[in-house]
Image (cartoon, rainbow, N blue to C red):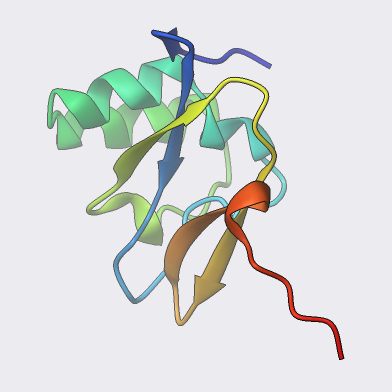
Length: 102
């Protein structure tokens, strides 16, 4: 899977706004979390080009979460998961969670 890595961190694309998730609503295409082209479009705020690229590259994708995509830079090799609530995604790093034992 292609990933964009800068200064030892991997770009992860997610949708923090309520309404529709990005990767969580498109499990068929896990690579959209890391796609370097998507990262570039988001960074440059090229929304129209992003939508055309996604539609052509990922046929049948649900693009409701495409508006307001953000990039989170995560240290390479870090375990994480994308949480979703009412379409709003957030990134949770495994080592940043303080588990409580009953």
